Length: 222
Image (cartoon, rainbow, N blue to C red; front, side, top):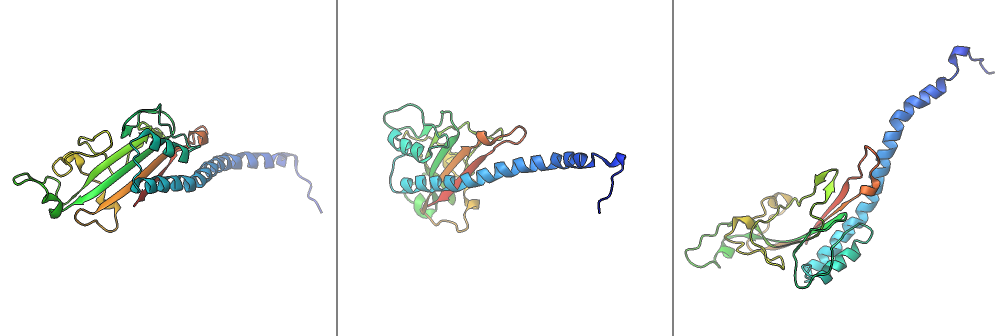
């Protein structure tokens, strides 16, 4: 048996649907953006690992040829390295695009490392982590949701050569990696070296109105 509706009850389903859709549409948009970024995260993590693996095996990413390899590995994610250059450029970050790669070599400075200094020279960075090399290429002005990205490892302010080698890493306080120790479960020992590969890829194509696409950050230690 069916119940005959009263005239004042007609159209209630439309009102209920309109109220529910106000909550469902934002939720579905967020689920779509988060889901697509999750899928991309798998590939971006692999890109980060591949770049780090090449780095620890001696590929000099301060050269344009090596950065071209990085751009090919990151195909589809908007990593731009600019026009060709000769020699070395460890700070090729003034490009556009949606990608940034940061490669770092870091060492723990103990008494043994300080022993290499000439007599009378103070070891400013003893018992600290220091950068031995830093290379970045892509877009250093890259932003995730209007916030410029930066490496959680910190950024060396010491003098760096064109190939990314940090000068005076034992005596220049600008070579210290202040945030590095808290990222390790097991601390390094004197003169032990670790390599870090970091990738940042923005997702502007996934941004929908008030729901920005954000971006993806991957980090791998070797």
